[in-house]
Image (cartoon, rainbow, N blue to C red; front, side, top):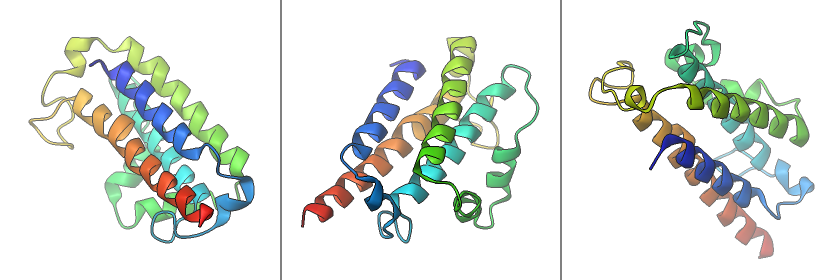
Length: 158
């Protein structure tokens, strides 16, 4: 499977997970730990930004502010969500979509051989390649949160 397919299916799963969640239900805690739907999507927006930055490094883009936040650790997930607390549902979705479009554009420019070359992202592990990273961040991670949205939707039917 190609990286562009993985990105497509990951995004589709995430959006299908959001289907049917009414705006007033986006604020309720407990979807993923203490996070609400909006918080999870704020997290996903920051992850999508990070993926775009990582892909950008293969195209000569040197700035990676979101990636650097995550590499520093120390509660980066929570800090990225907190940075978007004042954002509404539309703003969080828009940030995610803008970042997703950047990812989609950049991945088209990276040759498949480069995507599959082990060791090109040593901070992820010497045995891994960029496509491995895309599989996790662009597909698996989205599927994980889509499943949480589906469980949350079931709880609303209660």
